Length: 236
Image (cartoon, rainbow, N blue to C red; front, side):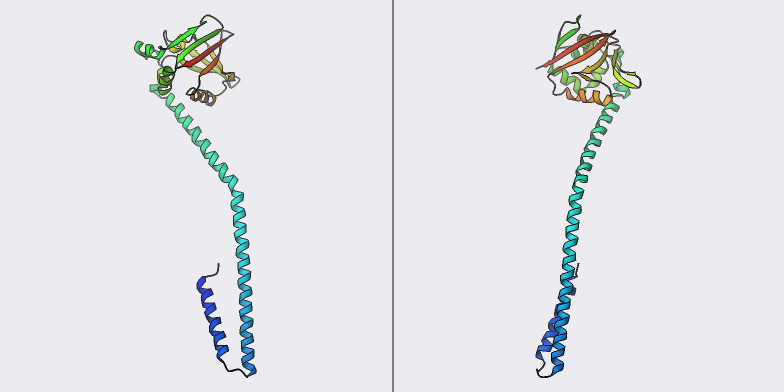
């Protein structure tokens, strides 16, 4: 980019040269030659300035093209950052669930806590292959706000086959606990929710987070080789 002071100085010099030439008395050939030389230099300078402006225009166009080309990369970086933040939040949530004070501890669950955790539950068909229950929304919200309260009522252990998770098994279910009230028994394995197989902890956490807005879910259980459907409806 041309320094404005250089442009100004050049114009001043040209102006002085032209003024001096104009003030010289006409008549001699040397003055005419001097004026022609100044005019020639002025024209050459103008051509150089035009060439510089053309280069600057080309450079500006190139920079604009590069900025447009980088837009998809910028959008991808923003999306990747959002995904990383989501994964980090899930990792912290899983870490909180695995803290010693949040690990399943059925023996440490008080009877009053069990009662508070199971009020507002009505179920039908507990001895059949299809159990239907209604759960108060307030109870669900309470459990979502304090997952450790549910964790102390039973142990849920991932079941793997061939290196892959095929479901989550229930153990140590306390009498009067929420899982017991829903008809779940020790050894039952949760294999799917709303028809979606549970194959990873991340998937299970996504389903857990979706309970905030769910109005009805269907749990697929496996009990001693038999399929059990547990339909839970959340009511106000």
